[in-house]
Image (tube, rainbow, N blue to C red; front, side, top):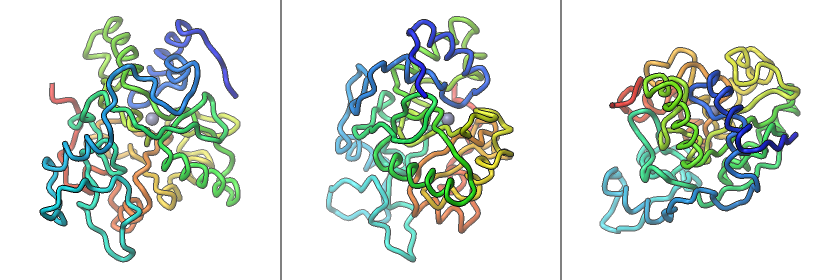
Length: 287
Ligand SMILES: [Zn+2]
């Protein structure tokens, strides 16, 4: 179901929606920023190549498996060997990596990063959603499994959101409320997981408790909380982890991290990326 809206109206709706979803994307920002969904980025800013960002961050995150070879690390985990888990196989800093950790202390680098492999996700949606190819494929499989196993019908509320979109959303809040309140209502540009193309907001179909805490009590919310890991997704902002993630409970926000990592986290019963990788808690921005 698509609802074309004029940019001005979309912005108004965006602000209204964001008021209820501080850490998350609005369901209309994609429409506002990209009236013609395409597989290329709509960000007008320079888009670094994945190999450039890989090599730029390789020295910042030395790998235990690194050799004298300067070859960039892989950005997905398809090379993970069954039965072993190497926490340094993928970068947690390279924005193209499935394991990139983005929080209030870890902005994307470069801050205007845009993925190079966005696709339109072929599932039900409130607005035409885009995700990176690997996340899209996993989500299609997850929705099909949910429907087949009693999890109910689902739709995407929103997926990728560009840096430039977030700049306009965030600056709108700063102008109307001031910076302090804006930081409560909206993620700063460059600090949103949605900019990675690996994060998705999911709601029930028909809509029920969309982008609200009560989604966690719906059949869809319960199924996702129990099963998303099997498809490589992580419930990124659990109820009791706000002091670590910096975001209140968002049972609708799922982050693609790949099946190897999601399985390992499930096995170890570790629920946040910060805890799994031994990173600092990120309850708020550094300044
Ligand atoms: Zn979200």
